[in-house]
Length: 105
Image (cartoon, rainbow, N blue to C red; front, top):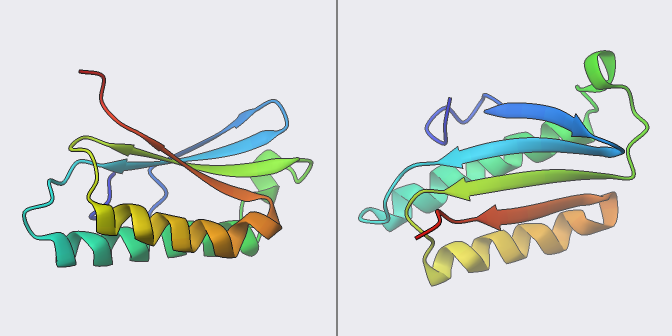
């Protein structure tokens, strides 16, 4: 699974009292508008999954925070950073945090 499958969680797991959702972004930024739309849709679906507590049956609900860890294969553009910052500002009050990761060079 990956960014192009916007209705799927790429991976999910528990790390102590943190629920972690992994989002894998393998796309380059040649078609930035399309990439931003996919990224926004995928993150929105992750946020909805968390807000609706769809994870409770398998993972419980005793988390101090919930992380969406986005792993980019090709870095990120300034517009991508703006998008993630805007979404982060909206969800941080719900104990949902977005972390971005880049490949080691």
